[in-house]
Image (cartoon, rainbow, N blue to C red; front, side, top):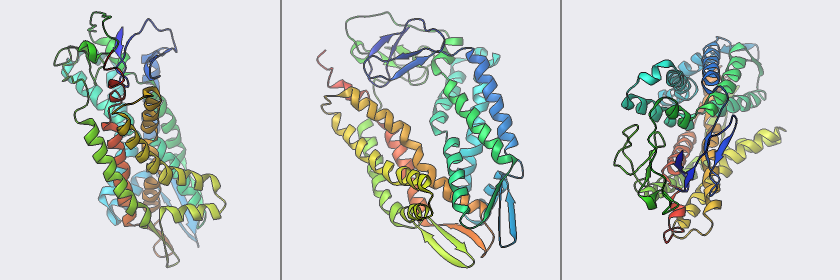
Length: 402
């Protein structure tokens, strides 16, 4: 099988892979494909387990807390409902989508794509399913939500007694199974298993796909010199349209939003009628002085360091596109940016959780502040910016005379 690396555009011939083997691009180090043992059975087993644990996590007892004789037990559904009723429908919708609806939709599509029905789908319907799956896969925030739950529990222990229930432990098992399901998901195996493979003739006149007028389909990974993919009929392009301009614009917007996100308070804690507004940095200070050093470091790195590092790193990559002398190193930096993308959402989920879970009136309650809106917008803009960047541009000028 001949494929083009999506990060450097080099053509690579992949021989037959044994079980548990991965194909790595020899030029930039990007993972091109992987082979799993009992792929279909494994992904269906973990997918079904994820759905069952997700349903059980809706148990009425997710987490409970008590203070001054007042006790409240709440489920995930109740938390979302309270958030929508008392504060923001937008925040409630974001929480419901990221921790319930998106994972459930992804799991249903995965189960469908690995069922006997898949081979009976026409290319158009198969393309829609795979495109939606590839869109949902990087949006998985269930693991981030779980970390946020643990951080929220640490913060609540300062004011109240915490007890976790069946829903909490079920959600932990769901997250573990869901992460494993997504790690098993292979776009290449999904298409190669049922759809007819179109393979171009092996050519040796140039090492890169664009130099042979070949375009890689962003949906199914097929190579072709046609206007549309011969396998899934998607429109083919050599590079992402206006990649540099869009990426720079979104990141510049993100860096502007970062200023009010760090300066303004993100939440207001009401304890026995006393209001205490907290910014991201003041929250880190509180956790540090309380002795919760790992949590304080995690929030500081994820919410302050990572957004700044991502901004600097992406503008560095944009500059390097003009004449990149070390494209392999730049490609590694881009993959690191992709990985870091969602971790800044930890503080967003912490605030949403505390607001939705902690509602005991003037005794103990938490209210969102304007800073969390700017911070959420900043994180989303950074994710969009990195997604618009085309890492193959880093290799174009280096190889234009080959």
